[in-house]
Image (tube, rainbow, N blue to C red):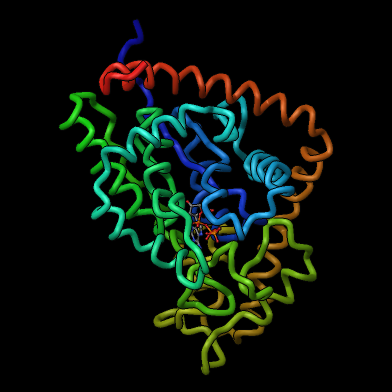
Length: 333
Ligand code: AQP
């Protein structure tokens, strides 16, 4: 019989809906890397979630995009010997638990989800999958009896509803899921768009100057940062940086290391041109080894697939153990 857990279980994932950007790296992946030696880690490429906006994904590219994201996890520093890295669609229990949780989650709870409101805006037809997105996410998290969910600030509402769903399920069926807690970065939990410091940096923006992709070339990174929106002032005021400048300092801080105060002091009084060049230099230097490792990993697709296959087996064994009890609790086979 398994003894009590000695380490907390971490679960998190990213949708393979496009090239990952600095928000994904700073808000999520770098937090996973920082924490991975302390915990029992499970990192997923959530390709089933990517299906929730079918218009936005290129079906033919989705399999390749999922491998890109998995390779980026490793290239950014997730160690497959310390962490389970797998593709969500390879562990069928995610969809099975999501269905069961769909049946116990009140629609009123889903109607409050702000991400659904923003992602469904402007869509001609909205699929039921997008509406139920947080329930699939709850299934991902609960399946592994996750203690901590390291994500960007935008995911707080989804982790909270996961706790509510777990509580409701226990009330109905008497089965106890571990209640997950959110874990966010102190600085960088919400990286903003370079073109609009009031909007979250996102993969789905159509403005080419909005986000820095993790695979962007140095010249592209410099160009995007040079065009980043700041404000009508000309020099950095560490006491009161505007939203755009604060965002650039957040990006710098993530790559330069050190404290937030050091990042502020480093550019205090300097012109915005110098700030943008300094941030670009730090980003280019930080992304260079990631890009090198990524291309090496992608050139050995067989090895990448084999690693993902082993990890999917490890994840499936854990997911199946949970599902045996869940099926019995709800009375299905
Ligand atoms: N701008 C951000 N700042 C900090 N963290 C962020 N994350 C996303 N954007 C930022 C975090 O990255 C993880 C992966 O997110 P996702 O792709 O699964 O979903 P998302 O939040 O919808 O991400 P995007 O990039 O905005 O993609 P699209 O445009 O496809 O929706 C999560 O931990 C998220 O918090």
